[in-house]
Image (cartoon, rainbow, N blue to C red; front, top):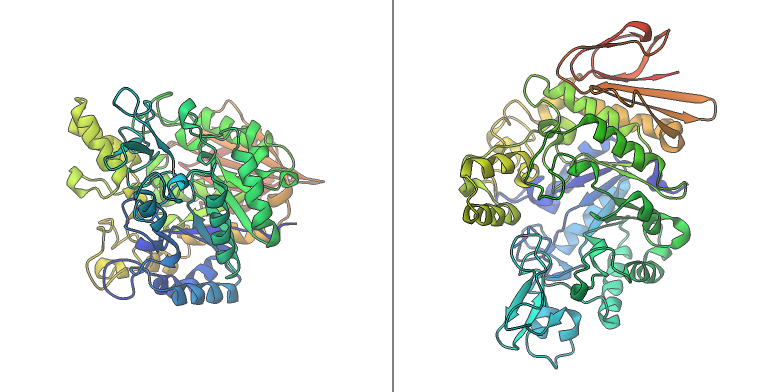
Length: 537
């Protein structure tokens, strides 16, 4: 069995993890200094958001040199030490691979700007004006047109994200081979694989306004696999916002030689108004959430593989989003952890999730850092939205919520830095921090530690079949895992009120629970707010 099928991955946002030199920015040496903590948690792999050289227009997802480390984070020697030190603790380093676009400061693009005859020109997507304007009305994910005019050549270049993130032209074979050489550069260093940023964009056909799942996408991925991943024992996970259960197997069926798994985001978009932007909010319907997980647990095919996550650097804190980050912060954080980690797939933990970190509301746009948030605010102000409505959306869904520095203790600046942090910590760091979580045996941390241990010790959590139960229940999320003669049941009350049910006729002992309880009477089951437990049938 592939090592990543019973692994648990921990995502680090390096800028916000641990600063060691007092400049207010997390660094690679800071990550190294916390490896013992991660080993204690029990994780098997460490996914790093980009640490490459970058002007940081989009916090490192705009890379100017794939084979260099940003000076804020340290040196390539530091990176080599991190890979080695992590390996000694049984932890593999997963790099973030951003190959849909580069920074406009990458040497390839700087060469491309020199003229239409430059050999690097075709590394990017250029088009002539149409009727004196952009080639078409394709929109950037960061607001505005996806086309930027270059005065010097009289052409437009494509940028699906920031104008400082020009899209690479995957039709160009020479460019592709350079990308594969870069991938092998990192694989030869002994990393454990890649998380692949917006990878379903690389087959785009801008003339037809096809941005994701273009006709040559899988041809490119198979070529990439043949030139790189196939020759190493590594894990690859693609970020695919446009994935469905029907096309998931195209990415992750091992017989197709593409990726190990994908991130799908259908569950993450359930609190958005259909057909609208992520900022247009609606209440989460638990039935929708249950049915979405059921679909992805049962319909992707036996040869495909799921990734499991609630949080990452692009999404808000789950305990604030769908839990209760006030009265039931600990209980709801544990409940969401228990629900996710007992499903089939590879679980991902985003830094701070394991101690129940919460969102950080802002009262003015001047407190925002993220380019997506700032651009959206200006666009919606111009469209006549009220400041109050826009800030409400930002506080619920904004990316800054996840990107604030980790509070390691209740010391000044949470022990993250001895200087001024690049972004303010959540003001609750004196009471919600890692040190306090480690000191409290009933904290969220130890629930995560126990869940990771269970996955390593029980094959049913890796291979067991999934069956949703209590499907129409508006407050209870429950499912079974079954492998051979063994069956486990997971039951969670995701409401803020006590719930009573009859779900059987025996008394069971929990494998894990988030309230201190020795047994549960299934014929007269009363669950407190956000109470969750797992039992063997």
